[in-house]
Length: 56
Image 1 (tube, rainbow, N blue to C red):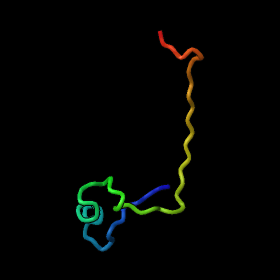
Image 2: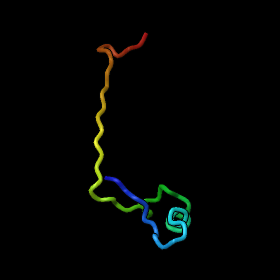
Image 3: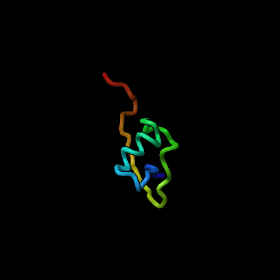
């Protein structure tokens, strides 16, 4: 699921206001984020190697 900042749209600079007032300078604080519904991502990974798994 994607998330977006829980910003105050009425602030002069919403991104800076969010960083200073909502999360007190810590952008990893989960209280400053809200879910962004109906946004999805899809990833594919391929792992290739040898059967013995050793490098000489």
